[in-house]
Amino acid sequence: MIILIIENDKLWCEYLFKLLKKYGYDEILISSTWKEAFSIIQEKNPFKIILDLHLGNSIEDGFFLLDLMLKHNIEIQTMVFSYSSDIKGITGDCYKYMFVKEVIPKTRVCEFSNKINKFLKFESYQKNQKQIFISYAKEDFDIAHRLYKDLKKDGFIPWIDKEDLIPGQNWKVVISDAIAKSSYFIAIISLNSISKKGYVQKELKIALDIVDEFPSSEIFIIPVRIENCTPSDQKLCNYHWADLFPLYKKGYDSIVKSLN
Image (cartoon, rainbow, N blue to C red; front, top):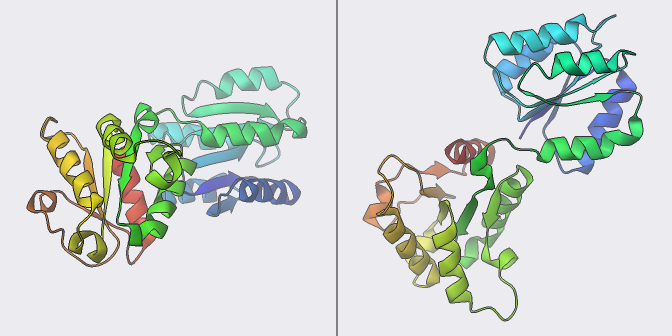
């Protein structure tokens, strides 16, 4: 997920960049003007925005960008900071924009680390608080685990056996219960998963039985291919799949779109 930093102070850019890297974010874009920033927002659709209101000699450029986002119905969650002495007044003005989730004085550097971490983890979508079961063949654990980590980093609640089962549990019972309690079922499709017998087939059968209870317009099962193959189960073929190949990010973004 892309994080956009809008800041024209080189030292602050370096500080924010290192902070985001520390929290595990690798796709970081930086802009120093409202015009360039708005172009990036339209083209790249970043996950979150961190904005310094003082892009020019005053805060007008920062507010102009916020007005543009509002005018174009852009609702990307935004964190704002400012050097202004009238921080209380600015805070009230900023929160008039529903997509602004955090406002902080630029003088309080000590607060930045915790504030930014909290902001990046904040999600307003209720669906992101619903469980996502990830089903996979054991040979495909690496890609399944990568998907698990990325979803967790982006505020979702994924469930995968290697992370969520604990010693002593009856794993068959717990897995069946986890599928039943999940709002989404991601089926990792590969030559491994379609050609072998095992519990991965049982997981899919449970999910297909559950989906029969859903309205046809609702999403529950999300097939995700990791290589060029066709699901062996005809029911699964009825669902449009996402591909994590040849470009992982493109496929991942389509999964997130379904979850949202």
